[in-house]
Length: 529
Image (cartoon, rainbow, N blue to C red; front, side, top):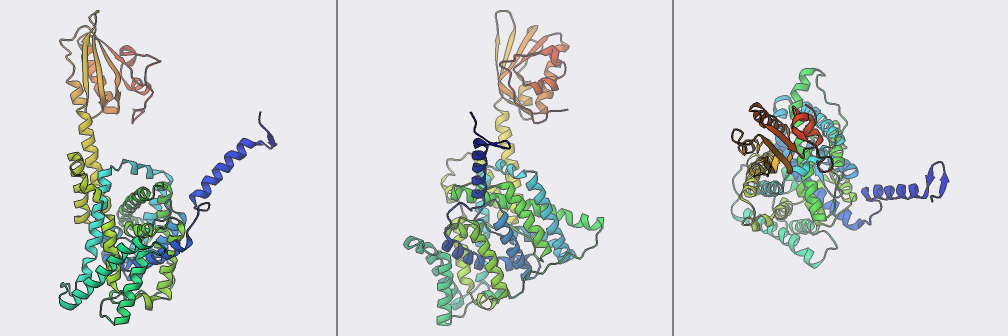
């Protein structure tokens, strides 16, 4: 008996609402214990690591350094607050820079900002349509290849620090000094957590190397030698472009590619962080957050971006698990730009290089090498191919799409070979075909070869109890095989088909035996012709 409290409420509904509120607050980390010291220190470390990356990606796209830094601030702050994966870091990325470089060179920065805004709208729409669930279709070998390729990209992007302004490799004393500082940075990042985890090892490494360089007056490249990061608050700016159809046709292809690249990279990063932290993020919520961040980035003079696996791994490895670290990273980045640029520009690039090399080492899936002799050859092919496409083209979205397509084709081929039929003739002379395995576009040819229409008896039964009719190609195959039998005057019975199969078959009332108890209720991919 329910205890009513009036106006339709009772203890059961109140309890249900309370549980929903608990889940809601949990999603926003308001009910979870937050280590504020770890979150703040990790955020400061990430902010320092964001600076050279944002500057480098802005240069890659042919834009000013502040365009990349503003994007890193806006993307980082918005996704930290609204995103579906606490602890994940977003900012200006190389994957986005590769997409927009042609647009920037041909039409200028105003068109880039407009394309960024449009890509954000597309991402928000994808989030509302819940398209994030399609990331479940990405196989593990593709993720291995994506991560390994990204590790190579992160590592190779640091090699330019070992070159002079003319692109020649360093030699002699400058090379030895740089190597010593980089190796010492890597040693601190690797060794300090074994002694204490009270402070992030990456932050300690940056401060120690900074202190050594300043104290001994070592002549080495600093952040300021790469580019000046001094600026103000990101200015609000509506892109100055002609509002006409031709303009939309110019930016739409770039925006669509940016949206796809950003979502794929962000959702894959989310899945990787999920595995590391043994928690679960919300892909569709992250898609909406990424889109919102890109819209605001374009309106506040930023080049756009997406999730950054390297910086996310720095944050997670420092022990950060809440939204606070991402918020601190974004805010501190803006503080560095507005007030601390003169100090940040003194940070040795060697410290940041060593930090990013350690990120690359941690990013690489070393377990994938140990599993090579245990994985199917097709999975190895997919993993290696995705890695190579990622490294050669620096296009993470294309690499993932290629991997998914190949994995899907391999899966279809393997399943196409599994279709088989057990044949028998009962005491009444009726021939039975018991079909095993899925019937779909890939197995249709093998399915048709199972039947001997001319030599079969006058009556046959095709039983799909151990099979499943998957798509319209399978339906058409059933139509054709039944027509072949009916043309020669033979009677066909189809058993154990789902209701939607029966609706789509020609002459269904003549050839199908319906067993209400045993017939399945699965759905085809296409329900209507």
